[in-house]
Image (cartoon, rainbow, N blue to C red; front, side, top):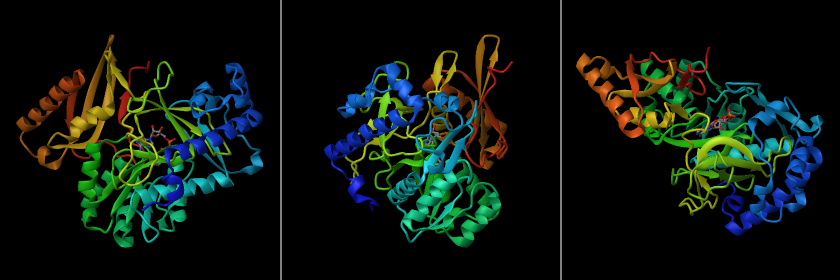
Length: 434
Ligand code: DLL
């Protein structure tokens, strides 16, 4: 089922005409109202009137996270403060927070877009949605909440934390849909088993998971352990929050970008030049309808490919391959580029290991060292030492063979790696500490 048939199935020419119209008006708006953009446009020698085709977007300047930090807190807003009805902020792991503001219309659009996502995931107005994304300054909680309400579903505004209580309510309220990070979904399944509640036996049907990278292997694991269909939802605070793109349940093959609101490009992260469809690049978004804090060519740092081929669900919107890494998450271990997701795939594919892991990077002298700590499951834990050693060397061998780096692999006890209630912390990089 498609929530907004008209806008989600526009023929390509109509979509592009709509995008161009919106892009032109966006450029006029930011040039007139945001001194930061006026300066950027002037420095590049580009005027709003220079945008004649969609391809002309490449004439426009990029925006990066640091720009939002430099304009902290409200310098990028394009409307007077009295039109802003909501603020969200992402703290990030480094540096000053970034702040985003929404007008009433922005909030309405966001609700509609997340409602589209929920329907694409297979949910309907008849469903109950257990929302375990954190409420507060993080966009996950309120974003999913307003979307579920716009859809007409019943929302349980659980937020993150109180994991045992979450499991009890999953049993008692029998929701059809759960929203949380993929790593937290696994933690819920694990906690359920400790409490004698097998989530697979509950009516829960659909999980809408995002806010952190995960792999297809992890999806298979979640689907098995929770007995649900696991759908990938993508978004970022700067652009809106959750709901920028979503997988459809029909294909589970790439995430449909809400192109009537967000113009997507992929670029070479080093040169900044556009890359072609199907080629991996950094995802860049221009917000076509945002009023509070419209952004031009925002560099997400997320790596993906764009796929314009038709999808069997009937939506015509471009699909992005799931994001398995960010250009700034890429680890360079002794010169070799390694993404945490590549290691995750190897771990999950290994019998006896769990998706709970951490990567610890140190520098000894001038050499980087990578240690992979991964929890074993109960069965392997109670097996002989010899079996543990066999698994350790198998993982080391696979990492060496597939990724070309030498890693120390340390198997750790079940449940010894700290569980996160939101985004999982997978990387501990001690190289840049004094
Ligand atoms: O994480 C918004 C969100 C909330 C998305 C709930 C989905 C569900 P930020 O905290 O600003 O916003 O973090 C945005 O998280 O640039 C990606 O690197 C990463 N990310 C978000 N969704 C996915 C996903 C929210 N499905 C940053 N797969 C983004 C991979 C994701 N990475």
